[in-house]
Length: 331
Image 1 (cartoon, rainbow, N blue to C red):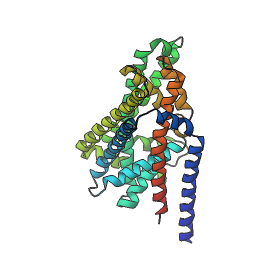
Image 2: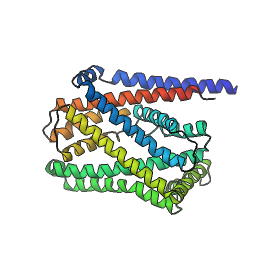
Image 3: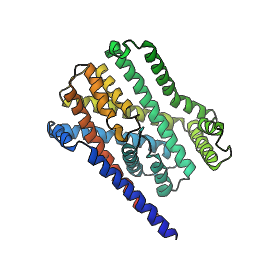
Image 4: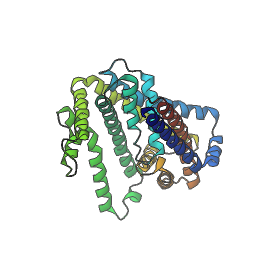
């Protein structure tokens, strides 16, 4: 009976991944993407691929540093495959660019024998450092937007702009404050779960989350060098994302200042917060709007999104294939 259940779950997971991949390619503008790619020279496509490869190496290295601080035998390339698989699941499902994290936990548990609590703690630290750098870049991007197009952004809605910026500022404070609280023996997610009136304080989920946050706090206190190293790697990965976007603009003949490029990247990043697979529609609108502020035609702005789609579809498809391979080995 157990074998039948495993086979059923395995088949259901593989069918779901196949359906996500089919849906993505059915809704992707493949003809337009191909036309955009043909405008680039082969070496330019190679440079974009190389930069993105380095980005995924760096974000996997960040996670590996966190895991290896307490588990020396974990393979880097195993975590790299799990990280790409997690991106594939996150990209093709409802946003905002999360959803593949359970695959990271399962990879550590199945391949390296870590407990679910320890695996979850490492993924929690990885996401906090990722968000810390992303929100830092977001803050710089918002500053760049105000620098590059203050009148357009403000317009006649000064109060609404201030409220929106205040909300984003509070959001940006979350990762560093969370890490600081973990360091000081406080588990904010556990406290929040227990504060909910409908959540049992001693439930299995609450105990599991408390253990994961306690282990994450232990990492912060006992491995400060690993924490700083993973933060430095995360900053390099963030710089790589900005470089990737700037290279796409340049290769497509769109020449903007540093501030304008940063503002365009920020608009694209914010579009992935929409609860849509891959920011479908939101990404295109963000680039047409943001780049249009700087005199870039709608056609040129759309070509940027098509190049981004080509990149993400390639990496996301590879991730789904890796995820399918993992599910096919479930025992």
